[in-house]
Image 1 (tube, helix red, strand yellow):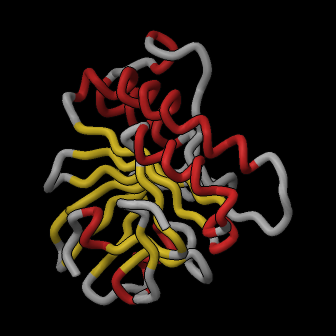
Image 2 (image 1 turned 120 degrees about the horizontal axis):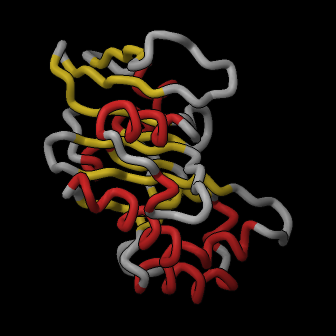
Length: 184
């Protein structure tokens, strides 16, 4: 439908929309991958941070909601409110060491017209806010959407074009591991 919009069906090599939408759950089921809790305790509010190991090598960190702020404070002495006036809470985020990149991933599904339509139009602002916050770490920031099939409808063409024009990306149904630059 739109250049750089990606869809697919190979759920063995990517974060799938149906089934395993959470990065952590996905990696737990992948061969040669192991997940370890970074903070040593499981938080029932899904605000955990995890190390991602591939064949025993630490390749990435996953952060749920508030955990990214705990990580920034604990490991980088970075206070978010010195950079932002309001916390942003991503559905998922992953820092990949190989390419020194934070991937902020928002998972959006829809089956009737509603507020998610407008949320997709906030990507430019949110990407810039994440860049401002993470600039002290001297890393790249990518802002991505994992979208359900609903958003393939013709009435989303302008919105999907806007996402691409805002230097953000979207994927339908799954995100291939190769796009994150993680081993297969």
